[in-house]
Length: 301
Figure (cartoon, rainbow, N blue to C red):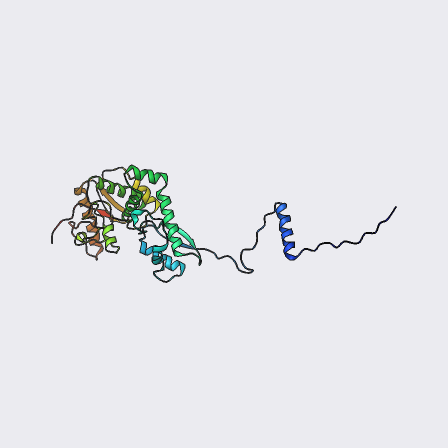
């Protein structure tokens, strides 16, 4: 056998980067999932915090909560509205009231207030665009914005979720009869307050949200309604009610006639008198609580 001399060949040596590429390529070829570290060594990803926006909050309350949740100076979130590109309907004229959808939102130190508000608005738009809500609104001749406005009244006026459908029916019945809505919640919004006491003088204020003096829905929503209020707005409970009053928590009474409503108001007044201050008002006061609809207020001194 003839032996032939061959010069030994040096094996190629991979650089560190080459070894890593070869290793990853081998794993990928074998179908092995690879997870590369996305954070510096020893640094764990930031755990999101939960920011809760309840149903019925007004826009200023949401702004304050976002400022606090993100650790921002007061007023930062409100200032972000002008440049956030929120995607509001034209009817809103840049005002996000009613479209800051109530939910639990995960936030981190990297969350920007404008982006968070825009996400809330997108969520509200999605809820209003669901088939049940959108079709129900069209059946009642309402735009999505009008649905949000009506839902915000329901959210403010209904004492319990079970009452929402009935409150919605009162509003629809009053609109059908060209009756003023006479909702204390809209007066409270106009006066930037929350109270169960509405005075006769309050119902005389010259304000776009005075639904005692002005017909129809108020010009904008008055709070952030949830999905249940939206559903009630487009699918109200059948009934002929025109009035309601929350006599006490958990006891809202609906009436088709003013005579029946006056009896319920009298019950409310008795309970308020027994409870002490603030003193109960006469039953001729236009509405006895922040949750109620009455007949035209008595004009007098």
